Length: 429
Image (tube, rainbow, N blue to C red; front, side):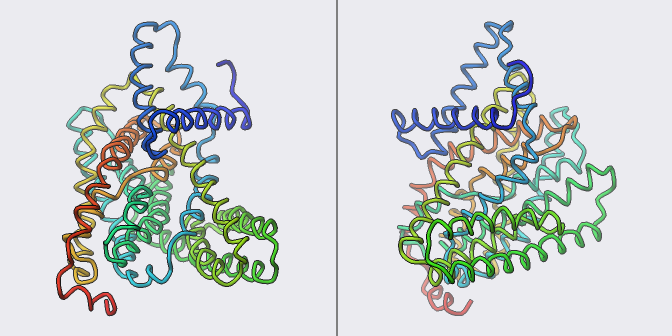
């Protein structure tokens, strides 16, 4: 590949690649799209590793790296795709069920993300140091923030028809949505600190977090309510679809100008439209049209993200120490998830019976598109390749191993009857 590709050309390569792999998956593997794409990229990476070793003059990894260097990941992913991903995910969160589990969701999405960030950050610093890869603690905490949000799409698809308590289903959906937004805020705060060369001032970080998250909630409510009123005043599905697009793109752009969290704003706006908007502001035809459109957007963007992380994996083929670091970090991420889940469950054990909730929340807390987008948006630094490679390995394990085995786990765990004293607690958490 010679020269940098333009934005359209780069997008064309990504979409064509995602379409080709999705076709091959549907035609031959018949796996869920995220699992199928991850598996094919893992196999392709191994094949290219052999080809690059056998024919070094071909420069396969160098060609992929040259292509990736031509993409502005921060503008493309962090400032673009995340808005669509979070709004699309929020549309399917049931507000009534979310209210039922509001306290554990709040704890998991805030304290849980912060706890996981700290545990992973310090653990990653220790593991990388033991392997002779010196990564400053501040950058390790950045990695902790980007890998802590969960994206349990496969888990929710299997959990919804199961016999698990509705409070557990709502907690899994709500936590995954809001910990994405909170994780992005924590990531932004930490990255701003390390990129600026300053120290990690706790008061300044807490102030920035409160402004970004709180401002995002307020802006999301304002954007969502404005979109709701506009949709309610008409009945024309194309116009209402355009209104939803305007909410996402205009709302996210406004969040950037106001220096508040766009991801949090999109999550709040999506919940409002997905509940009040769908129920009160749309006809049946418009509702079906809008929800199918956003479902398609979500699937296309996730497919593109898996393609991009696969390309990053190919570009890092020769970085064996980084891949070893990633493999060593898998257990750390799972332990951090278990510890961050254990606290809220200890407090709200009557609402979320631990013998059902703990294994599903821990093993079903898959890492996916959000972690990939954040890792790829990191600025150039001596530590970027190590963090991206580790993210690649952790997400690959999460999708292939956890994603492939969470179904039997849910069927086994969800069939367990809850404790006798858990039922009345759901009405009075």
